[in-house]
Length: 388
Image (tube, rainbow, N blue to C red):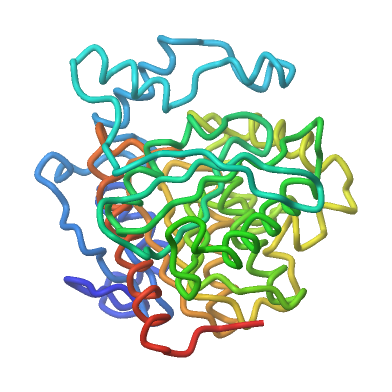
């Protein structure tokens, strides 16, 4: 679990707050909390002065709100009101960030040593990937990354900032994969592409200046879903297992219940992701109710989650996916896996790639890089890593 500054044990003290209550309280005051099976621990980054004033639940920080306001300025058109072709032309938080940076005269990109493109062969055809290489001589650890966008919108450009930040922070090559999207290619196309792309990179890591013993998987939102599904498929099909899974506010079920359903209702009108957009994506990617029960679509519904690699789950406090991400962390931990779950308060879905504007994004990237590095180092030392 994450090394921390202070610990708040669940079920102790005179406040009578439950573990869930402590999480909600943290979200009201900003900062980040890391949760483990033994209690709640504050993440490595302390609360900054500008976050010290308590905020109402669901109220973004000033930095986060600036991005949301700029997104509204760029387009008031709800994505879910449009057919997929139109939806793909509408701006996302990444474009809002670029707009703000342009107005300030600040650099639009974090520099890495090189960015190239290559084709990854799969049984369903070649897939374009973008390869980010950090400074250094290599061979490097490798992170195979899957972008978000609900399996319908967004692309490699949309998540460029996340990949650059992770390449530098973790000192790894990042291979960002352009998997097929719905509705033209509904489930299981994206899941298949993710699995086969990971297997190719892991088998041919030297082509990417990578170390074949140090290949991890990660992604945001829909990409977080594809990342953990890749691990399940690797276990069940006898493939190469990632050494780590980085899951940034992942979709873990298309049949939400309990806390998973409750936070969809609680943040139904949240921006940039609300209940309507979440349903829009689900209807296009997994139109079949039967398929929604498939663990390759809804990994939370898997009957067996044992034998998976260490997981880092990063959550945003203002996000309809908050509940199902927490449920998945609990389920992975209950199955005996190494799990770190960190809730970043007063930020929304899509905050992770906004490091040029939102402080919490930098904290989250640093946490992710630290956890990845732990797994890369463990692989180098021959420490036990879950395998198929």
